[in-house]
Every structure is written in structure tokens, then in C-alpha cells.
Length: 128
Ligand SMILES: [Zn+2]
Image (tube, rainbow, N blue to C red):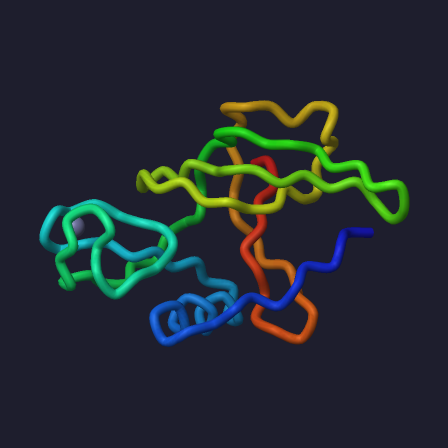
């Protein structure tokens, strides 16, 4: 059993991401001016402030940058942390479907989508 994830906050900047997530596709934003990908999706590139950003479909693969295992007294333990995507950006996420005792920094992971409480599915990561 996995922990319920709250529904994501969807705004105009991120709506295409959540729409794609509903179809099981993982999108990132890339800047046409500086060529870098970024996360969280924004209209203007956070690296060079250009508004020439485009959506790009990503395989959603990367490595664990850091994580913490949370062990609440009630339901089930869960792990949150950062994944560095192969495209470059790092994102805060939940790790699922793995033995937290063996999860390690540098491990290859891949995105999957987990239902949330009444909203778009949220991107979470599991070991490849
Ligand atoms: Zn840029």
C-alpha cells in the first residue's frame, strides 16, 4: 500500500504537464535560447529568463540525488527526495515500489504516475 499524495496545484504554466501526466506522458520544459531543460515548468526560462520555452516529452529517467525515508508512527513509511533527470534538472519527488533499505544515491530511476486525491496523477520514481 502506498501513501496518498495530495492533488497537485495546477496553474496555466503547468497545465500541459498535468494534462500529459493524465495520459502517462512525462513532459519537461526546454529553453530555445540557452538550450537547457528546467523543472518546474515555467513560461520563462529560470536560467536565462527567455520566454522561448517549449514542451518536450522525456523518458523520465534519471538518478537519485538525495532522499530521506520518513517513518510516521501510523500508516506506511515513504521516501521523498530529489531525482536528477538525464536532461539535467533536479526535481523533488516521492520514491515508490522499492525497498527503502536498499535505495541509494546514484541509483537509476524512472518516472511513473501515481493517482492523487482528486487531481492529476503525480510523477513519482521507482528503481529501473
Ligand atoms: Zn534559457
